[in-house]
Image (cartoon, rainbow, N blue to C red; front, side):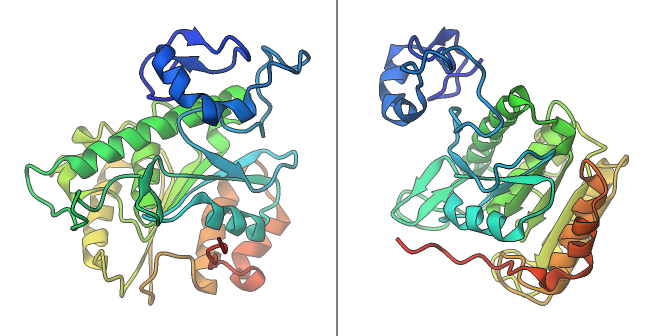
Length: 308
């Protein structure tokens, strides 16, 4: 098992709830304020029992379930740089996908007073990190986030979620995390979507499938991007998609572009493509999901940041 605080190998259980692990007393002490609300030692009926599908996360990432009804599919939302899980929790509620729960996760690294991130985009002075052959900070952050996300997925599988019905959907840098996690996962996931996040970091090098240890040639992928995106050129993403398609030979890799500049599902056309990608991959064929795929105007898909 992995330490609930630092993700290092751990064999010591919390003595109160017996549900989370630590590598030592130091990590347990630091993590106690975060773990305390979910440590259920006072309820003797639940001590030692595995968490339910919708129990609060106790692993290396924090998150919120948007829907907690009995269902088969789980869509995991990963936000962009400087955002929080709350925005995408609201989006999951608005989507109301049938037979589907939504889990909005929070990136592990705080970004000043803005929100959180999955890997750094700024240096210690607040300047953008520039690509170079020797630059490894973004890659290191990506690897750490993917490792933590894989631990969360393992925990979800232990709770009863089927791995083949878990889908990762990332926005902006969350999209790169979603694809990297799905491609490098030890076991096949249901699929992944990158919305305006590209496919991988340029620092990964020309042999990205080797450097990022991709394993899954049969994972379905959807990559969408804006033709007017100011931070990541659509031509760059198109070239990345070709590399991904050369590796993923046992499933379909879809690439769609739209006349937009933001990192949101912001049009009916993009919404239809999103639902049409997921519908045939979900646990069972559902008329309601197919209706969403035909009419993307059924819901408002541009989440608004919650007031603080």
